Image (cartoon, rainbow, N blue to C red):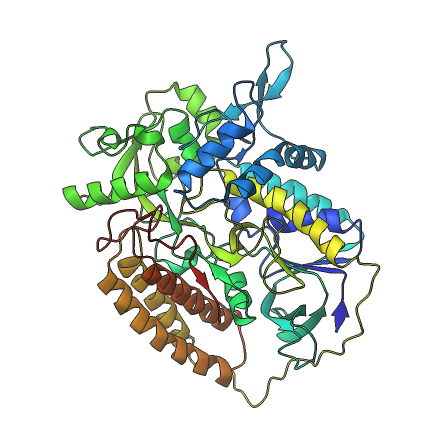
Length: 532
């Protein structure tokens, strides 16, 4: 058993910024199931939202967030996160993060601000079109240099260890994790009274997604099994513009491109978004994704197009170098050609229910970022608010953890039993795992994606509950592997999404059902809370 003052599950902006601060208070273990660079943060293109411009204000940013969230964002939560943004940005800069600049009024460089859909002002700080990669690289570099931080790569967190599971006669709390060391195939016991979940989202539960392969909903599934409350899992954001190409089907075309003037068009060159929203191509993501979905179904075409070719070629290559170079590899020159795009699963707005400080319903466990549901995103996330939430709430979570249980105050010594493998065999047929994985993702795409119906949700629920039994039987009879653990978590999270969607008898934000097409402010539930 290894003991740390803090255990951090995940190595994106939430986990790394928490770890860098926590390392000043004690020892920190960062547990990440692949290389530490394999995170949703690293894939973020657009930027991080923060009020900085003279024409902008916290009130405007709060208003835009509340509008996008379709009535479900607690205003106090939104205001606290937004108002803490400037300090969080300064910390990122202090850790070495560089944002794009342009000449200010006095000729000195100042941070350049972009605009994205749903924002009424320019407030998006960016590093070309690879903002997430810049943040990831600089924070990870700082973390590797800190003597109090241990980074455990290729360690897959299997389950949270709780006093309830250990049958200890004390109030329920989290006391550590079991983790699979993928290199040795051994299962380690990691002990801490302060565990942070920041494992990202669950995009891989869908057939088409902009997320990296690690986004299999592990944190939500672990928290659910440990007895945590889960909130608003029906709100899955589909990014409107994922590149439509057989060899690059997960490549995101950032929202910032529409913020800089790109227009959505059909194959005839018609700009269709004003037929759905007066803001046109700058409407919030839920509206744009449904509009594209409807246009595709109406025309029978496989995609629509995003066109920025009317902008100067040098500007396009400078502002969006990664998209420009990537599209060229499949013979699309975005300075001349419209980009074929389709919606794809992108962001999980629900998750482990927390307060604004990241505190979950299980003492000893905090959750930050996409895995969590603070309420900031409501029924639909405003573009570039996610990196902001990770940077701000990770700081609030650390402050809460230290206040709740200072590292100097050691809890009682707990001898946690090691993992019992029992009489199990090696996985004999990986094809079974891959088949079930594929079935889950296709089922979710066909029945539980941008537009839903009660009948589709019922069919999905029936099949998923059967799959849960199959996977659980498989889990107990064979030695754990990464593939088996991810499948176990995927089916758990898929079921939570479906069960949540079935409970919301209205259309709101990212949840649109043909059986209840209107928003119902009088009779709707504010939050869909699931608990064991």
